[in-house]
Length: 185
Image (cartoon, rainbow, N blue to C red; front, side, top):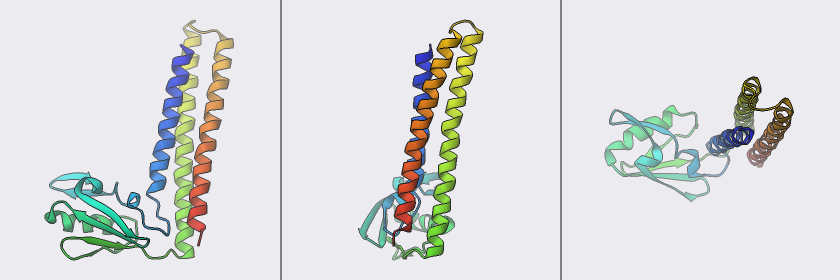
């Protein structure tokens, strides 16, 4: 029983870490990367879809992203979505291809992005801690039901705490790396 709870707890923590890493990919650095825009939501044909589903994305230069929509009718919707996002990039279009010149980051903008990374990291830590709390609650239920001894519960709680520490450490390392990348000139 405790093994199932530990496994579920680890899966939840891993999912929280992976979600954080996906969020980090959307935080802009000085280099052009398609991960910056691929999950951008675009309202088109009465639905909200991710940009990667609507267009071919490319980074032909270090300071340029290109978007080639599969349907020319979606160009305006894509431009509106980019302008409405918090990317701070002004799209340029010739009606077929949308170009996103990535300006160099100012010191102030870098610091804003570092704050975003720190906020996302805290959200990730909270998710990991929530997985720990859920596991501990499940273990307490098993003790109350008489299915697990208190010694087994203490041992399992220790393993859950070790997992929590491991995942928070990985999350913090990823956040530090992103902050270093952002502050690099």
